[in-house]
Amino acid sequence: MNIILLGPPGAGKGTQARKLEEKFGLVQLSTGDMLRSSVARGEPLGLEAKMLMDKGQLVSDDIITGMIRERIKQPDCSRGFILDGFPRTVSQAESLDVMLAACQKEIGAVIELKVDDEALVDRVSGRFTCSQCGAGYHKKYKPLKIEGTCDVCGGHDFTCRADDNAETMKTRLKAFYDQTAPILPYYQSKGLLKTVNGMAPMNEVQEELESIIKHAHNSNKGM
Ligand code: AP5
Image (tube, rainbow, N blue to C red; front, side):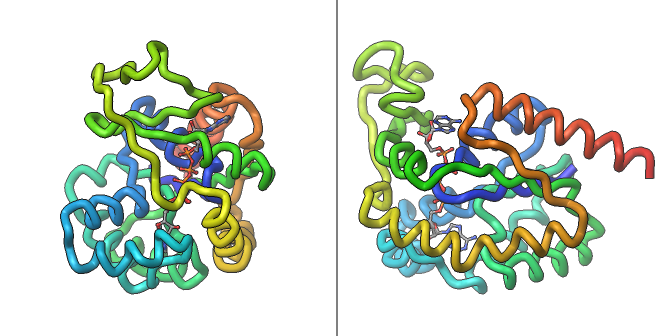
């Protein structure tokens, strides 16, 4: 089963994708993470993308669709994947349809996480990550159990994303409403779109997502 998680910056796509990865054995494909890895490796593509990411603007459709086209051909994706942060424009959604058809794959469900703008700014402003193992935290909503120490690996060094500030969030939100939200009717017309209240506590959001995926899986089996 292949899933798309849609939602504005800070909606909880990455948080929930990691939980679904564990629960259903799916592979999380985050275009944001792929771009940040490319930046960290100093690749030309990453450096070109970094300027746009730091300003909160979208990277070009060609770069992103090229990355996903290569990634979904990898053997681990045969057990199913969760797209997190892709597609983000109608053009990306149309390219995805073409690339899935070419490898006889399809999308089982598109799930939108709906969260108020005010809460989104609060969420990204408090977010930080362990530099050693990548575990994600939030000052208020997912604090460290022991101050200054990663719960997962015991590391003591943490980083914040350059684009996680109130000013850049304005551009990221504008990009979401102008360029990404038009995808919602695209998937609604295909009968694939489900909307989840992303304002609920993380475990409740997780339960609702799991129930949607199980239902979509059972409906597909009956076809
Ligand atoms: P990307 O990395 O995809 O960032 P984003 O979409 O802005 O989403 P985030 O990662 O910020 O948020 P999230 O929804 O994953 O939230 P999270 O789970 O971390 O993209 C970054 C940039 O790359 C883009 O701006 C663009 O430049 C470029 N890019 C990427 N993909 C692209 C594409 N397809 N096309 C063009 N450009 C592209 O949660 C946030 C925080 O809230 C966490 O601290 C978490 O603990 C907390 N939290 C989560 N859920 C809850 C809850 N229910 N209650 C309370 N707190 C919660």
